[in-house]
Structure formats: C-alpha cells, structure tokens
Length: 166
Length: 210
Image 1 (spheres, each protein chain N blue to C red):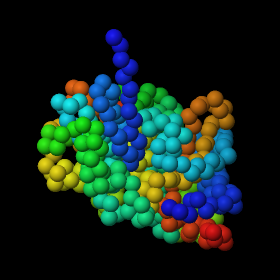
Image 2: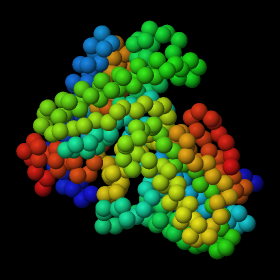
Image 3: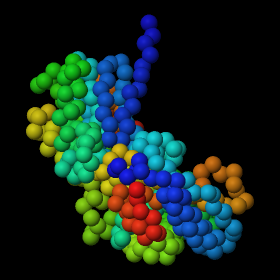
C-alpha cells in the first residue's frame, strides 16, 4: 500500500500544521527563525517562519500573527492543539536566526535581527513552558528546513554544510 | 502599506525611470571596469507578496553572490547587486587575472574583495545617479558580500517593509554582457525602498501620492 507524501510549504511570515506521513518545510531562512512545535506521539506538528521579534514593531493596522515571535508562538500552539496535539506534551525545535552579513559595529539593531529573533522565540516558548529539544541557530548561513512529524527529525540544509538532522 | 494600492501608472513609470537611470549609470561603470560593452534590460517594477517576489526572482533557494548595502538619508532602503555564481566567478577572474578562481574549489580573499569592490562601485554609481536625479541625500553603508540562498539574503531588504505590511515593491534592473545574452541569470540590481521612502521619492520629483 503506497501513500503519497505531501510537503506542506510554509512561506515567509506564514505558518501551517502537518500530520504524518506528510512533512512540512520552509525555504531560505536567513535572519528569520523557523519554529516547530510538535506532539510526537500524535504525529502532529506546526511550523512558523518568524521574521521579526515583537508585534509592537508593527506599523500596520492588522497584524499577521506568523510574522512576529510573540504572536506566532501563541498562534502556532493553538494550531497544533486544534490538529490533535496535547497541551503539556508539546516540544519545540528551532532553526535560523543567522547573521547573513558581517556588519560594521555601529550598524542598526535591524541588522542584528537574527539574534533578536532567536531570543524572542526562546522567550515565548519558555513562557508557554514548551521545552526546546533541539536547535540550530545563529551562524552566517541561510537554511532550508523540513520537519517530519512521524520521526520528530528536523532536517536542515545549508549551502556549505549540506544536510544535517537534529 | 495602503499606498501600494494607490500607485498609478505614473508612479510605476517613475520607479522604472529610477531603475533606468541608476542601472544605466552602473552599467557604464561596469563597461569601463571590464573594458567591454554591457547592456541593460528594461527595468521591472514588481509589486508582490514576499513569497511571490521570491518566486519571481527564481526561488528562495537559488544560490547567488550578492553585494548588499543599506541606504540611509532622505529615502532609506536596501540595494542588492546579485550575480549567478558563474557570472561572479567570470568577473572575478577577469578583474584579478586569476583564472583558477571558483567559489567552491578555489576561493581567495583577493577574489572576494575584488567582487565586493565591484559591487561597491556599481551600487555607488546607481545611487549617485538616483541622488542626482531626485536631489535626495542618500548615504550608502559599507557594502557587504555574501554567497548564499537568495531568499535568506533578500530578507534583510524586507524587514522595514514587513513592519508595514506583507507586500514589497522591487525595482529590478538586469545588466548583461552583450556577447553573452544567452545567460539566463544576469547581474541584477534590486532596489527595495523602505515604505516611507516612496512618498519622499515621488515628492522630490514633483508627484504626490494620491
């Protein structure tokens, strides 16, 4: 019996949820952070592609929840719970938050956005008591990530180091 | 970013003209540097959601060589000079005389800094033409070179825009070697103004936003 495996795509400032045997992926994470929240026993996972640390930075009237660390983590938890994940059994894996360019020291906060995104995502996960079981953050390389809710493995592809699994 | 929806044909034409003048000046500088004729394509102004924009430029995972500068001053924004790896290698070999240069097998500091300097000169001539045309004061940052996935690189150009909405206005101008027009990936200048800069640019040219 063969079953087609779908790859659920998550865009920039976007989020989605996946159930086994499908997998979920987002491409070209630079300073952005990919957050995966999953319940391994239920084989369900959600992924968000977070761009900015705090929704207080928004200048628009409507806020796209997936864009900001504070709103994305809360909304992603809701998505995973709706899809069958159990509160208290959720775990997280995160990747991204690179600094793609070596900026001169006087450059603005926006240029160090990768580190700020990572910090904000970690703080939000802590606030909701979701343990981070694996992470691959910082550095200076772009990442494409794919999560398999059946195995709980997060595959990370970079240009220079090929694919690694966490 | 409501004003994106209010842009008229006139505004788009102005943005195209900016790409024309900027990249035209840069193409002349590149011709002089490489001592060969460089052609310029008609500028594209793309108004697209972030993911659409990545698709339009060939997909977020495409690996490119890119020189990036942040623009401060009267009309803050971001400027990217993007080359395919093959074309970047060709330029580096030509400028340094090192025929063995390759990003994967034989990358040298000299080659990398030659490309960074090339990007610096070209982006500088793009921006000075833009400043002359608009009489706006523009301060470019120190240029930074990186070789990586284009999506990961261009994210820096979307940060200010993303605070205001989910759309970007990208002014894209390609330059290419006259004798190699078959190259599918040419050198591209991407200008991504911050959301508030559009009003400054249009006002400087005597056109108000509706």
